[in-house]
Length: 453
Length: 164
Image (cartoon, rainbow over all chains, first blue to last red; front, top):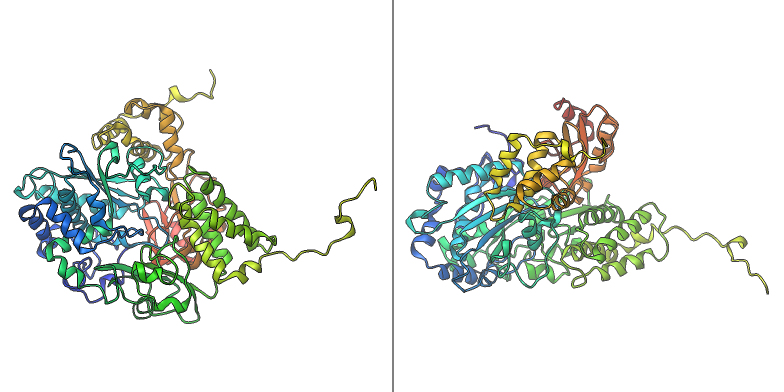
């Protein structure tokens, strides 16, 4: 086997880890090579699946996940047990699907890549247990096309699992059948929206669908479907294996979210990377103790807690605790929990121009506010960046922040696009005002000629 | 005969056809294989010619216009010829902070192409791409299936050399 260095090899491989405190990452190898089946089993792998399939009723697994307080790790933070509970109770609806959202494309997010490249069996075990709980007979991992190493490693791990009787018919003698496929995408950020993902999996343009009906009732091919993020599913084996009480003991006091989270810091920090950390640590610990603070010569100007769709925060907000409610207290969302440091050399107008170019390009074009509003914001930001903005441009940008906000558009794409814009104008308005061209003194010829008086 | 209508000149190879038929069995509905079918054609030919929509639609039992609609929606399906190697430069805000615009400039100087363009010798096509998930090593880019991190403008020439 070739020993190529995976892009995801990083600090998560190097920090001290153990099974009790690092349920997601304790099995990682120091050399960053994938953990294949034999090693995964030596490290307690598939023990939780054995327990779930052999000793637990389906409803017990759902109840365990519900009680654990596990919330979705894709950015929105919806309680996983509640989502699972939405699947219909009607036993006659016996064709059900479990989809893994592995379309990781959120700018500044590289946590699912780490799990899939290095711990493919953890995801397979998580999907196996979850499928059992949801009575799904088939699963798809919807993986973005650019993650070629993840695709190769997942496919090899699926073959290993099939050969070992961990996927396929009568898994572990339980009578439960589950087959799993990797489906690779063809680009477009919007595929990460769960109903757009379903359309894409069906071979259609990835426009989001109206909700309701929710995927739990009418999902892929019209059947009950559950869509969960990679990291969410990777939490399931440890919860089932070690129990709810242990899982609830992981987070720091004050956190309303349970368990651990892959958190990160990037930008011009000393040691950018990902670490598995308990919910409730302060952003300052993440920034200073793990990422090492700013590189010499750079000062922290502001930061984003978790992806392009989250708002900017100031250095003083680093005291916030990293969990949904902790970040909400300072005015934005935790998102993916992979933070970005913006240093003093970066002009906010230019940064937002870059971000809105991305959001405008990736709009699926389905609803008017998003399709037309985002390119409008790009036009204004480009003018401000060149110093050719007009006096009312900042007001117009703020109108767009409002018109494209939550509840005004078909899906969460445009609200995510304007959240950083609104916060950037709020905290750094002077930089936007500096882009407004000075008003030329009125010359006589600029007045309309008045005729016939 | 008009040269505008190329559809009857396009034929899937036996390899392409059997790969598409194999993919269909992974899904409840043949339509779901449309994206994979386009990728199969693209892998064999570098891009997806017009006639492919009809040929794929015929296998999957869906209108060619639906295949075309899918082909034009997804950014990694190429509807015009591209170079032998595809350079994807990550343009996320993380790579913006890391200086990706200087990388685009360096590639532009080296190859004489802007994003969306192909070199005259057909060697490289340059496209922007959504966050490559290599943010601790920004700026990042991909050449074909290889991902590179901590790319420097003065290192671009050496990177490109490995792709003749």
